[in-house]
Length: 75
Image (cartoon, rainbow, N blue to C red; front, side, top):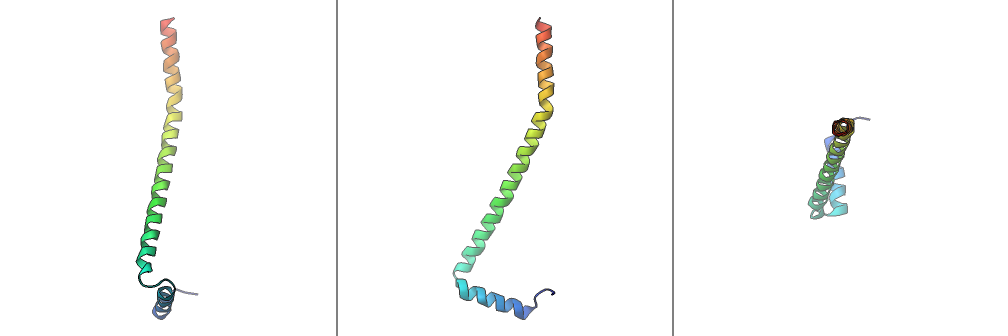
């Protein structure tokens, strides 16, 4: 089964207009766009949090080593 042809797309569009009405279609599209935008934002924030955690894990041993070094210097 291939891609739908132009008449098939027009039939689907007509059914959508009949079901939702011409006035609600822009609202539906706006809502979908906002949902996609929020989803992408959440994914980006999650990736940034993971990067921060990885950097923190890498730097923790350095900080601990520096703290131990200062303790040994003070003693």
